[in-house]
Amino acid sequence: MPELPEVETVVRTLRKKVVGLKIIEAQILYPKIIKSDISVDDFEEDLKNRTIEKISRIAKHIIFHLGDVVLISHLRMEGKWFIYDKNDSFDKKHILAIFKLSNEKLMCYQDTRKFGTFHYQGVNEYLNLNPIAKIGLEPLDMAVQGKYLYDLMAKSSKYIKTILLDQTLISGIGNIYADEILFDASISPLNKGNDLNVEMYQRIADSSRKILKKSIDMGGTTIDSYQPEQGIDGKFQNELKVHTRKNEPCYKCGQKVIKIKLNGRGTYYCEKCQS
Image (cartoon, rainbow, N blue to C red):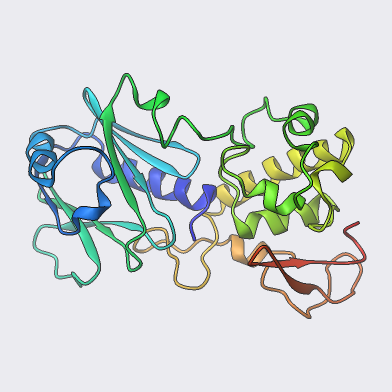
């Protein structure tokens, strides 16, 4: 599942390839992807001749700025954006939307699980509407410090890993990076939110920025079936310290990394190093 670094990688790639191009035609092949109150016909018609002025990101959402409207894309589990030349041959299986662009380009949204979403909203209002309005700050925001996290999370009796995955509290962290952040911060995922003090939350804030920035620099993590864009392989999977490393020696102490289930999520950590 793409997390913040993978989505940032997609955004940077799309910017290079499609910003400044005009949408000549849009084809929605899976109508349920559109979550805004607009028909497929009206959506396709309204997109015609709109220019992709810029592409931004908030948490795990990709935002195409199209004049007075934005198209917000959430990749969910398996969503991917691919750019092709008009005459390229490609597998159309699992393609849910095709945008014919100027300069003989096709921008295609592929999603094997069909969990991804499109929201189509006004540029002056989308920040105050769901899905964006309910999203917490990103760890990359320097306002996210120990005291900020403490005030937000210290009253909770949930596991700290579960809390970090709550996008309404802090956004952009998914299962992989939660494991890596807690290992880097030397904090057990089994700690409850109300077990931690301000200093421990500061370690989480610092580790979050460190891990996410490094992963962004390396193009994200490519594991299982996720690849952020054609021709791109993230390299951060080579830096993982605990995630996917069940029964392998901890890089700090040599004790075996263990895997447990926390609220249904596979969770990797070192019992000795994380307390």
